[in-house]
Image (cartoon, rainbow, N blue to C red; front, side, top):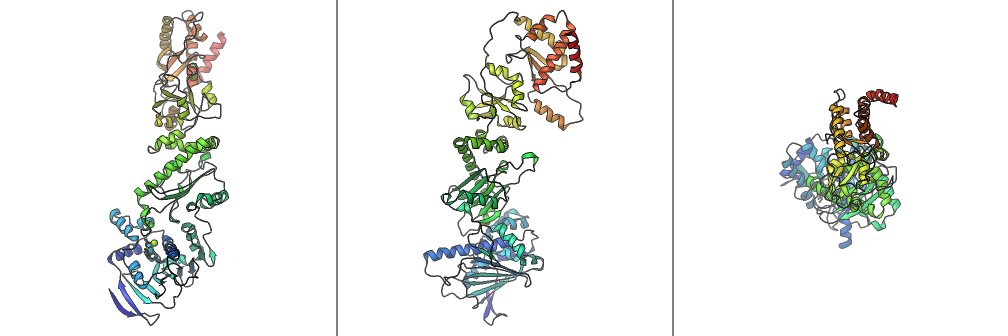
Length: 625
Ligand code: ADP
Ligand code: MG
């Protein structure tokens, strides 16, 4: 619908039109939303300018000469503080009068369609949707009370027009013969509360944030704002290491050199190009703040979200870089990218690729991988424990020191499995503050005697991780000091003089249980011991020393629950034999020794808590010595 009026600025006739109903609805939301990130209007207009320029470049390759062939393919942004305007000009393919009406007056050709759809589905959250989706060209009305679009199509004979609107339901179209340059010039007459966008520093800030990698030069007062290339879209073979490093520093605001990088693209199931970096250091080391997701999401070089929360799993929060997906056909706009399911799909693909990359690194550059693991293994452990989607791949990437590795060297679970003893169905580990601490405890003796390998779990999270991962390659992960460990028969040492008979051991155990009372749930002969007289096993399998410490920290003022353990004896040990021999004749001393054996076992188990009685007892024992 149109009516003839007379334009005030020139005497040529201007036609007046009404926006399509959907556009009216859209404008209403855009204008009245209190959305804070109004700045995205510039991202939208610059990406339109870039799209139009890209299309022109294509045309120039395939079609006859376009109008104004010498014109440089760049985008100019001109803020004018005095006039309170912002002008965005491109040398793209431009629009004819008809196209102006069709593209800017109806919804059919706009990505804004998706916005309206999401709005209908999403209900209330209008204002947020704008920021997420962008609303294409109409975002201009968030900041402008009047928008003029001057456009001259690439088609040689097409006259130029100016499209004008105040966003209130109508727009006009008039000839604009003075606009002779090919392309589109958008003049925003800024609203009073949007005057900031006529300031150079503000405009520069926004351009650098969202449009840093746009393919064509963006010029602001003669200076190019976007100087770094979108490396992720270039072919790997053309890119030098220094370029990657420079890009990393720029994009991630980093000062170090990256430790690892992965540059890949995929076509199926989704079209993705990605450039990922692992920094030199773990950003959460030394109790620093929890890292925020930092892999930015782009669509065709235009920033969608610098810190997307739903793209990658949380345990990948140490990664830097870019994921770009132009999965959608060109005429559908990038707004749809914010579709959550799609984001998840992209994230899954990227995560799988990254995990495969790590597996390859571990194979081809094991030393580099070990260093990476030392710094970032904690994130992989978190993932293995919590991320069911990627658990298997992550578990394969874990590394531990073990009784079969030198100090400082590690093994994978897969390698552990290749060394299983005949009949071994479990993977054993021991938790402790350090390798040395675990090695000096009694729990390794029986494992060593059986030739079983034990992993050293020395990081605070390890116990939690092992409990969550539970098994690998069909083998259960079992703590070697847990009552659950099903150890195969140990080779019997040769009988020696003075060995206790089974009957004597049983009597001694019964006596010990009576003597130690509440503190032990059970006393029995052990097959885990070689060099130590006794060991303690937490009676409650969940209440490991680590768990106990944590519980204590949580309920500081609650009275201590007494530790309850099952005590296992080494009947061949001299101390035990001696205890047996004095138990009848020197009950007092035997009682002291029994209590001391229990305390020693508790110390080794990390369960010993009250030294006051022990000191007095030790003096008594020394007196008698
Ligand atoms: P989208 O970019 O998602 O298609 P927009 O609302 O941003 O939606 O733009 C609507 C349409 O207007 C575009 O598809 C394009 O055809 C046209 N258009 C917008 N800006 C320009 C421009 N600077 N040059 C040429 N055409 C443009
Ligand atoms: Mg657009």
